[in-house]
Length: 197
Image (cartoon, rainbow, N blue to C red; front, side, top):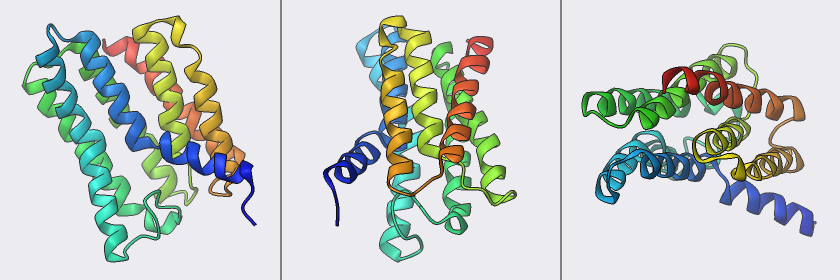
């Protein structure tokens, strides 16, 4: 029987999914870094398309075809192609933004996302351990918001913790998998981002 707590966990998992958070943080940083609202929109949409819209469209297409069980690709053995597509698309977006002269903060952020995927992908595929991409993205987003937009957004850490809790509550990850994802995401943006910006 589904409890109210389970429904809350499912809501957090969906509303604060990696695709949603990645698009939100990229568009926010583009808005912060660009010279005008129009350029912010252009840079933000390009970045979000590469790191969020295209990968989630690929995953949803695979779910409709029956290649994967769900949009979160909960079965570890099914994660190979989605992770590689996400990594390839994010890396390509980084190169495209660099070639087009995107703002440095936006370039640094999307490069950090690609770097985090470079770490998470072999953990999942080679070590056969389902590191939490939800945890990775939520922690990376919280760090980015506090570093780029200010400490007043420190409350986003509570949202990241809530996402981690939801993944464990739903039985999709262990606490260790969520914590490992959070560490990778936080380090990518907390350590690498300041060095690149």
